[in-house]
Image (cartoon, rainbow, N blue to C red; front, side):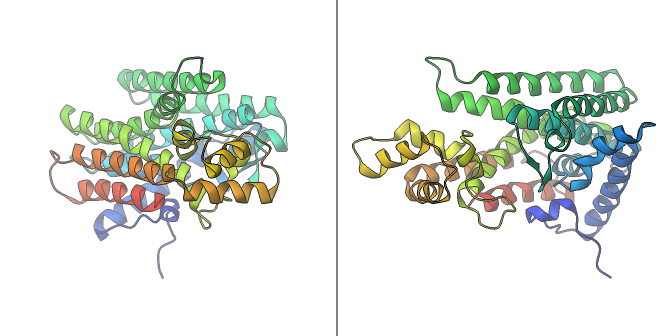
Length: 338
């Protein structure tokens, strides 16, 4: 009987080492059970709300990275590694509840978002409750882990605030967007890698290397999603969702920076981007024009460069299944975006 698929396998991730795959599968099963246990409350409604997004699925990319980075230390099976993986995923889940309120989202992972099913107050408070659960668990990992977690959450919130405020006059919209991606996505993925190496007993040098790797690959992962929004018909996300909602993405921002209104196609795409794209025909036209524009290739090149930069950071790590798996993540990011 073949093993059940890992959540991360929906990304196309595959293991080259059977022993590593077995360890990671076992670790993710423990993480999944611990997540459900952490989202249990004496109040049944709190449990229902807290598990609403959790049971809808998800890639579990952050716990996966914790477990892979732990392979670089002498104790990858330490119980603290699983606890750290639960901390970062609970934190991620908490931010999803808050994001859905900020974005007025109706769906999350194909199901009604918490704010749509109940209301904004319930969604916000549920996110707060999940973060409280993460904080309680991280306290058991020691004061340095608490410090790392608090600084990470500070970056997450700052990124959300800057995204909400938008670009101020005179600022570069693309630079602003990339800084938001670094804080909202890169920071927690960097902490995921750091926690894995740290609680497996890796050296300080290895910890810093994988933290920097996580920061870089996390940003590349998010920017690859931007390209999927334009290109993919099979990603599980309807193409043009961000485009329709007016959410800035890497290809659109590159296009806007280079658009030549004297060119008919550029002028038309600018017109469409500044209009209501709720109409399917207009959205399809905008997608077609954006797919044909050089800005899309430039966005793909940027993701490829970031993935290569992340790979270079791994060069000084010892060879082994853990390093090879992290290198495979770099390949995965590139293949997802092209």
